[in-house]
Amino acid sequence: SDVTKMAGIGDRVTSFVAGLGDRVVELSRDKWWKLALSIMIDFIGMLTFLIPILGEFGDIFWAPMSSLLLFQMYGSPLLSGIALLEEGLPFTDLIPTATIGWLCEFTIVGAWLGLNLAQASRPLRPNPRVTHLD
Picture 1 (tube, rainbow, N blue to C red):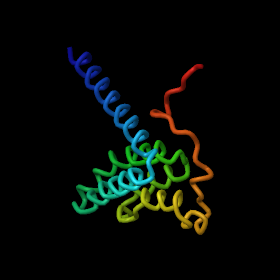
Picture 2: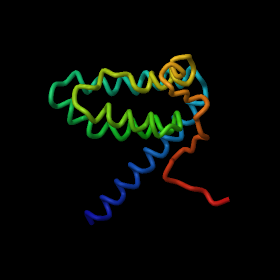
Picture 3: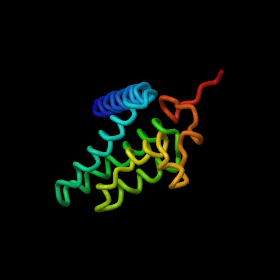
Picture 4: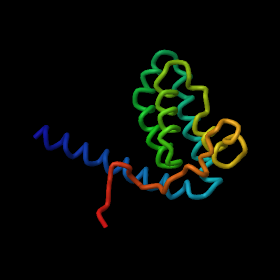
């Protein structure tokens, strides 16, 4: 039935997102892979800016994904919230939020901005909605 098909699609999407999150967490443990991922996230966000009007609708889908990826990479609710706003608001796609996050963690830029992510970073979990009972 249609309900069963929709549930199957939902399960596949959930599995894909969880797998993507696991891979992002794994890769972001290395400083330079984290930079590459940050640049890629910013680049994807900027691509939606290149298509007038239609691109802004793409942000509806990209904003929460970008925010979740940054939370998984940096463990910062503040940076994640900024990414959600930046991607969700019109005409702000050119701000490289993920790369700024990397700069805040690995350079003196974080101290200048008062966002030292290296000290505030918490252990990353593959999926922030999942809790494990140990």
